[in-house]
Length: 176
Ligand SMILES: [Mn+2]
Image (cartoon, rainbow, N blue to C red; front, side):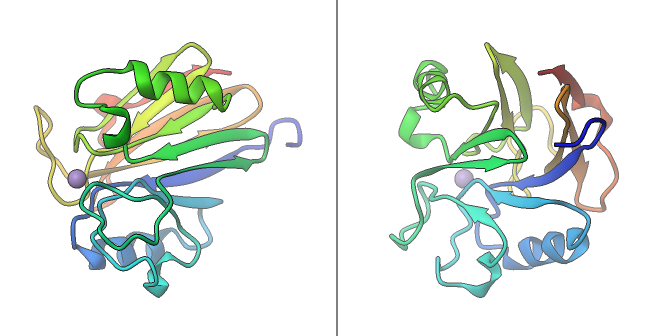
């Protein structure tokens, strides 16, 4: 990436049958972000044309069979590992997801499943759960998605409610 340049990705998860919100976010951010990720439990068909231009993985509520369980995407020098999280028992332990992120040398690891927005850095990897755009759980009862802006020097994560207002409480920036 050119010095001083940055890229931004949109990350959403756990839309659980709400096709409209996926389409709305896709339309709203068209031309404004460099890539879009959905971390699973869409409950939509993997052949749905909505997925054109979206990186999506299989959740525990996706019975379609057409989604990958996990994938790794390289974007402008950032290695992004993406999976729903249930296969790594994320409800119970960090260890399995952490091992996989290390194994694939991820700078950013995207997951979902918990329906609770969270971001933290472990080792070299920033782990991001964008929350759920449909069924938030836990202390923050707000439907959220995330934007990640990165450069060669930093990774910045901000969360937004569905009216596209920043939910500033959870924002974090990490050096690379
Ligand atoms: Mn879910």
